[in-house]
Length: 147
Image 1: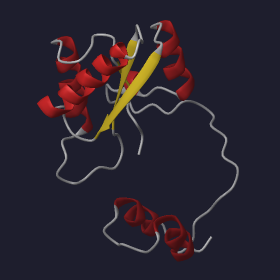
Image 2: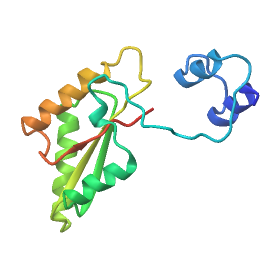
Image 3: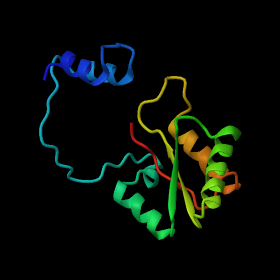
Image 4: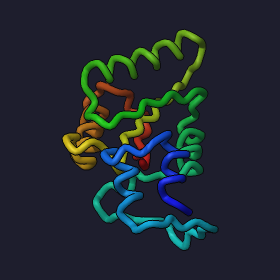
């Protein structure tokens, strides 16, 4: 495929500073496409693989927890008090609506982020601490959102 055409169709233009476009432009003049067969699960061996869950694994976690509602929060930043408040309040609102076991799904953004963002391992560790210390429900399911 011609890169410029694909990029324009995907992104509506060519911004050479966009991280995805930069990556697409690195590999020469063409993009290759076709059937993809996953032979085995990708492992990064960075201490965070336990947080890289498939959709099927996520659904099973929700079922195993007995969740009657799942609410999600995606972030590329460490959780601060404002984030925590939004997540806590969403759970309270779901309880007020009659849900007995709403479950928070925290999805830190993995992959490409801004150059001045905290590294993924730092953010994951910070999220773990705020869950352990009770700023977020102990039942929170954290799974990296690949980007």
